[in-house]
Image 1 (cartoon, rainbow, N blue to C red):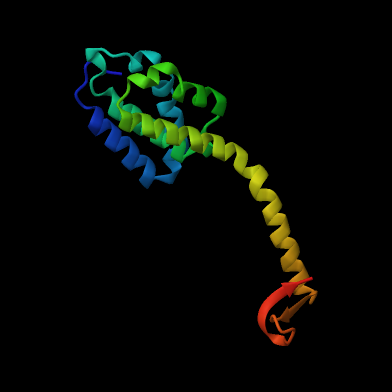
Image 2 (tube, one colour):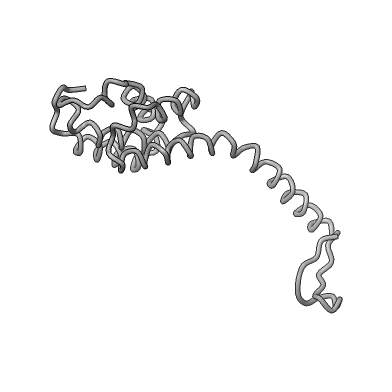
Length: 149
């Protein structure tokens, strides 16, 4: 953090650009922006923080977009939802909310996705073993919809 920096927008652009372009950097970028999001003093309304909002926007975007690299989701959700976030411009707050949803969604996703995959694999095995009949609504075989019984 550089006190009273005028380069917040440039830093934000470079962070997002590099992270989006270079896949190998994403895990490091998520860990690198973590201290910014945890630092409550950056959320205070004071002259030294004039351009920090743009950098925080980039940090929140990177954290949400690459949430699979976040080690402590609870810590990050708490940082992104603390009361001082209300001092940030609405455009930054929107990215914070989006990041929180992605962090929560990433955690819930494996529980939701796995059963669907098992069902699809089961159906594929049935099809490979000839346990499905191809019938249309009139009951004629060879045309129409695939019905798995």
